[in-house]
Image 1 (cartoon, rainbow, N blue to C red):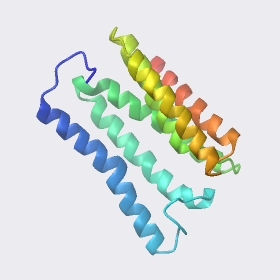
Image 2: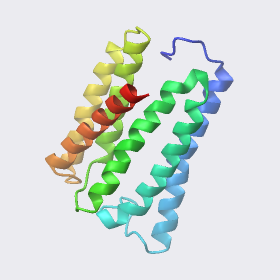
Image 3: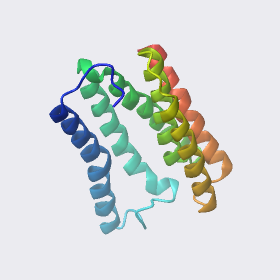
Length: 174
């Protein structure tokens, strides 16, 4: 919607299909298989140990998506979004080894928030309405994770900071 260059409808649908399949369908199938094999107790993958395999899979998927999209001129910035999120996931994976859990939900939405900020700035597009909605959704999501006792405040804050920091890092490096 906010791309400065017009993108054919078919190309948009193809992009959405690839991203949806890669980031939702494949991980869901993997979680179902891991649950059926008894490797995880629930689809929530609540413990650090249960999160290691699904997160490692996401590292691979996000890297491949980043590489794929970065090579397409119209989608370079979208490739950078996946690189930035992947960098955050790598950090989270290493945090697992010191028993630190992080909110992946908040990380994801803060990555999207940062991406929209950079994209709008780079292309001189007014993204303020989108930023306002994303800030509201970030607050609702973070509050929900706390209310459900899925995470502590530290885990939610860490997810937010990593999402923002890693997007900043990728946009300045690439």
